[in-house]
Structures are given as C-alpha cells and as structure tokens.
Amino acid sequence: MLQNLTTPASITAARQQIAALLRAHAEWFCTAGRGETYALRRDELDVSVAHERLVLSCWTEQGSRSWRVLGWEWNGQMLLLQTSRRMGAELPLIELVPRASAYAVAATIRAARQVRCDKLAQLACASLADARVERCALSPGTRPGQPGRYARIVLRRKQTRIAVCGPVVSSHPAAVDAFLSSALLWFKRTADRLKPPYLDQLWLIVAGELLKPLLYRVALLRDSLRNTIHVFTADDDLSVLTRAECLERRHLWKTKLAHFPPVPAATVSAQTAAVIAVAPDAIDVVQARHGETLRYFGLPFARVRSLLGAERIWFGLDAQRRHLLDESTRGDWENLLRGLREHRSPTAPDHHHTFYRSAAEAWLESLLRRDITKLDPGLIIAPLHAQFRTARGGKLGIRPIDLLALRQDGRLVVIELKVYEDREHVFQGADYWRRVEAHRRRGHIRRAKLFGDLRIKDEPPLVYLVAPTLRVHPSFQTLARFIASDIEIYRFDINEDWRSGVRVMRRLRVN
Image 1 (cartoon, helix red, strand yellow):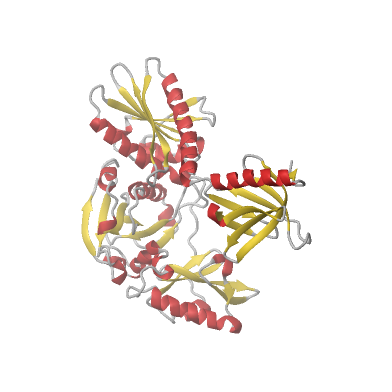
Image 2 (image 1 turned 45 degrees about the vertical axis):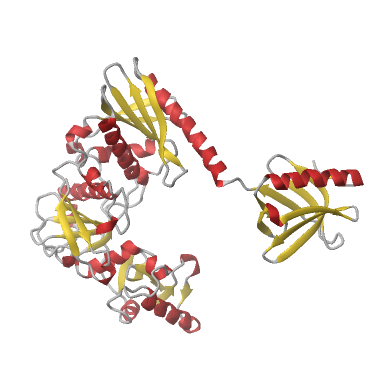
C-alpha cells in the first residue's frame, strides 16, 4: 500500500529511504506513463526536498524530468511512486525496477541449472546398486562466466566408472547435434585423462523430444563407440529414468519415412527475369511456395508474387518493412540495388557493413550454385539443388541441405557449407547423409527425377564438408573419427577470400 506524504516528517523519512534504495542498485528501469520508459543509472536519479515537497528528478536523452512525489511503496522488487506534474494536471504512477547485474543473473541461472544437474546425478546413481557420484558439474558456457547447458557427471563403481551427460535446460530437437558433440568430446577427454578404474560407458539422458533424433545420430557412430553409449529419457521432474533401445544401422532403413516433398519446377517469371538482368552475375532466384525469392549473392532482397493475376514485386531486407515496387517507391528500389552493388561485393570498402556480413553462408552457396565444379570437377553443374528439404516441417529439427549434387559417376553428394567455426558441422553432414540415403534406397530420388534421366548409382552418397581453411572448428577431426567409416566424409578447405572466387586449398577423407 502506498504511503502518503502528508507531513514534513514523513517527507524527510521517505527521502532518506528512497535515496538509500536508489544508491543500492547501479541501474534502474523507469516507466513514467504514456509510454515513457528510461534505462537510468543511479547517478542519473535524484530525490530531494524543496519547499516541503519531495521531488524526484532524472536526466534522460530528452533532458531533465522532475515530478512531485505524493506517495511511495517499495515491495522488494519495484519502487512505486505516485507523482504529480503540471500543477496536478498529470498524476503518473512511476515504476522503478532495479536492473540486476549480468553477474547476478548468471549466478541465478547457474544455481538453478546446478540443482537440476544434482537431481540428474542422483537419479542416475539410484539406478545402480553400488554406485556413487564422483563428479557433478555443468559444462562451460558459450562465453566466459556463463553457465553451461549440460550436466557432466561421473559415477564411480568398484571396478569401473560411468560418464553421464544430459541437458539441464529445455532443448529443441535441432539442438541435438550440439549436445551430442559436446557429450562425446567431454567423454573422450575425460576417458583419456582418468586413471583406473576407467570409463567404459557413456549415458545420455534426454527429454522425450530429443530422443528420436539422438537415436538416429548414435546409429551413425562407429561400432566401438556406439557400444559404449546408453540412451535414457527422464521426465520433467527428474524422478523416473527409462532406458531406450539404441538403433542398429539396418533399422534406420526400416523406420517410417516422412513424405518426400515435391520439387517445384524451375520457372522464372517475366518480372523476375527483368530483375536478374540488372546484375546477372550476382542475382539468382529461389523458388518458394507462393512465388519467387530474389537474392543478391545469397541475400534475399525481393519477392515476386502473383496478386489478382498480376505479378508484383515486394522489396526490402526486413520482412516487416517490405515495400511494393511502384512509381512512388522506385527511388527506394534504386537505392537498395545501388547499396547492394557497392557493399555486397568482394571489393566492398567496408567489411563491417550489414550487406557484406549478412547471410555469409548463402553467399558462398550462391557462388557454388553457379559453378559447382570449382569445388569438385567431377560434379555435374546442373541440375543442382540448393536448400533441399527431405521432409516438411521441423518436429525433429529437420533443416534443409545446403546443396545436393550428382557426380558424373552417378554418386549422390551431400554438401554442407560453413564460413565460421561450427562444432556441429560433422554431425549435421552425417544426418543429411542418413536422410538422403533413406530416400535413395526407397527410390524416391530417382522417381522424383531430381536429376532428370541421369543415372543414380546404387551406392550411398558422399558427404562434402566445406569451410574456409582458418574457419574449421578445432574439434572437427576428432568428431569426424567418431562417425562410422562406411559413411564417406570429405573435408574441403577453401580459400579465406572465397568471396573473390572459390578455390579448394585441401581435400581429404576424414573418417
């Protein structure tokens, strides 16, 4: 309940208490009505007594603001001030919320995750009669000082040790590659470092939504590693542990396969052709469900749609701020094209410009789409499928394949591109191999005539993992050796200045 300031004594006491509260917190969020919101430091706030009135002042980007305080309340989380301005014409209720420091927020998150980590350790330990928890910690965060997302637990038995790993936060199925990569690298480092008794098992404990994609990836590991892994599911309360049966490789081809999506015909409308003619070496088109998307070196900048029987162009880099191309927006359209020509170019003067830095992988993809033989002379230039989807939807974290190509000898090739260090590179490529191989075995690719009448060889596809030489993740080689040797994975190191033209610096088999 607000304390009304009606006497000099109450005003003096309120000034002292409010001033102490303001000093106790480095930053405050201030909401002053009519949509006025400020982020203020404590030295930008002041409370004083003038003419027996309590006055709150603050300094904002718009200048100094002052209010007479009529009443106040501190509820432990928010400072509420009933104020008056303009001789009582305005009576805003000001809310001041202290902003927690990044350290305090990180500490709170770390504590909550550590609690789940401890529960996970006790749950795993309770499933074994003679085990005790030897280690229970969180993985490192993505940045120094941040808490990790995975529990790393070591259980000690009389003659052996067991490594246990599991997410302590809710995870989308698309995060399964990051989790498995982290778990396997930690397991290997820990196993190499420990003295007897050695680690001989790795338990992966996940929620139900991660189970199926995790089992699919475990089936692609080499036999000696797969035999040490046991997969479990746990309920939300971490009170029940259920073991899941790991899949053999042959079982992958017997599981129900998602519907193979149709590939739209590569037709180009008249409007699209006219735009491409402006910069044919830079602009390409991607077929969408309801029209065409135009890209400048991979960066989407315009969409062509049919509206009431007429083709219209919407342009803009922000999906929320696209404009219809007509006479009134012709100048904005010309400015956009001029900016793309200047800044989305290998000779751009400013490498920090948004046009230059955005959608870098799509830029590399657009260069290879024009001539895939720069990567491998044995590849067929066309047809070549970019951002190829093997199924609709994303319930299992299904993402499109960067490039699906065919070699002249009839072997399918899955190509996954990265321009920055990415630890998930290897497992993404392996999962794409699994999905393409499943469709190939069923004859879906041949019947869909993805490569016309060209012969598709009755052999599993190859996997090409492409990245600039200095942008390959340090763990790439270790993770690649975890994959079964019958899955042919090749690493392609390309030149760092690939925007000026792609050149392969090194190619080698990695597993």
